[in-house]
Image (cartoon, rainbow, N blue to C red):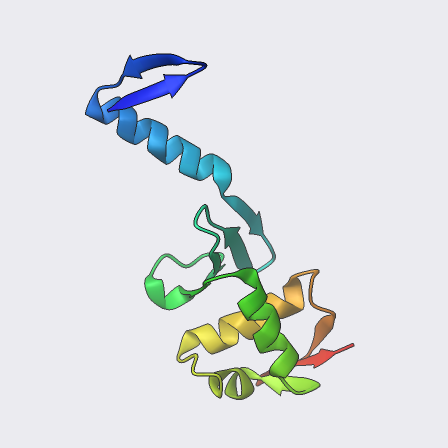
Length: 123
């Protein structure tokens, strides 16, 4: 692979090129950890929500853009649960993950009002 920096072209071995690609991708990602959830703005513009302690794909939901999560939130009732989130097509544990995430994320003006079943009320 060739890369040009300040008009000077350099040839990189494949392993070095891959590492450079990975490092640039990591630098372009913004990851924020909350109490039980994590948000990640990825280099391709997508927004990933995951469980803080989770590692499987069942513990994450990816939106094409953060604005998709905002639109989902706007469509939810004033008080909502995982069942309400599920009406949007999101299934399984991700429904609860998103309820908790919007309660933790400062962009959403809401708070947890009940833990079992998990419920959130918009301010």
